[in-house]
Image 1 (tube, rainbow, N blue to C red):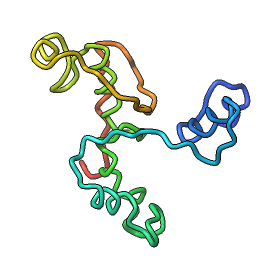
Image 2: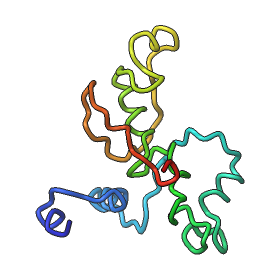
Image 3: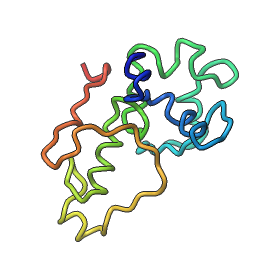
Image 4: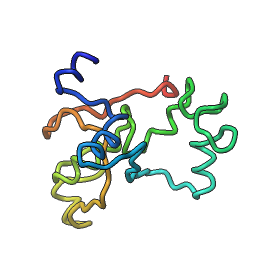
Length: 141
């Protein structure tokens, strides 16, 4: 990874927002970006779900969403390296059918897929026949 970064061919997703801000001349410690979730959680529940630690920290307790067998919390979030939502939304935006949404018939019934500003985690295998949504999460085994 260091070699890829040194040659300028790669930027890990965690560095992307801050690096983008710096490239545009901003001095940033962090750059917030909109994340979409398909879960219908009230705000207080979502806060507790993702920030269960002391003083609202995300990684300071055994209930951390980053702990073993807890990544299911990110299953339907647009910014997580193994989540399927970013790919599904992007393919639907392109007019392709993936899972239960998108495609010509879906658009005739519901209209064209329009997205607000969302920063997606990089979507892989962008072609109509791709089967890149088969990520298995620990809780599914």
